[in-house]
Image (cartoon, rainbow, N blue to C red; front, side, top):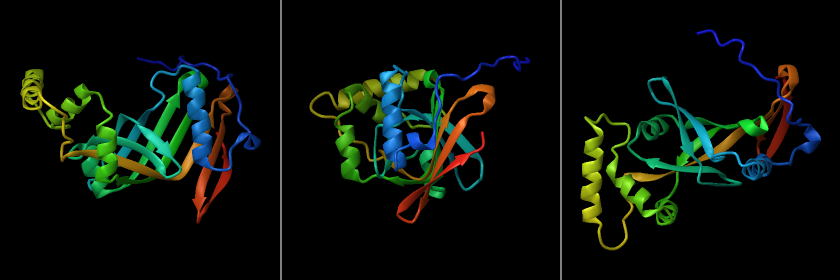
Length: 211
């Protein structure tokens, strides 16, 4: 199938260096709020690229749960493929694509597991169904059918029918500490505006990149 004729011009906005905040996380917060205000579905959905000891990259979508000046945080099964890869190689990349705004944000940095207290604090805020689901899935492992999941969910529901659902020992979070963050604004004729924040000691350097 030839899809080379699928194209559109980007005319939604522009980005100049004078528009940028001094720090990348301040700029990210501004753009993230723009995406929420514009009604972008799941603006916290981000592509996570990781690569383990075998040098084979993997890519999947995860949901960022919060961010601050220290980085961006998501949660997962600690025995999943992504977790195994990050233990072997903490270098990862993140991609946010907010199509209605014709914007992308690319984050490159180091992943680190969050502490138990931080993971527990978030776990207790999850809906009960999501808490139970964390116990059910041996994430990334081969299963024979969906019925296996449903039977295990029934078992877990009975086990924790009373009181709170405890956090599994194999579940937790990761923080990605940025070393570089790129902000991309689509422009006409593919002459996009791209600005890269690079960490230099305790400061950030901003460069404009060719599209």
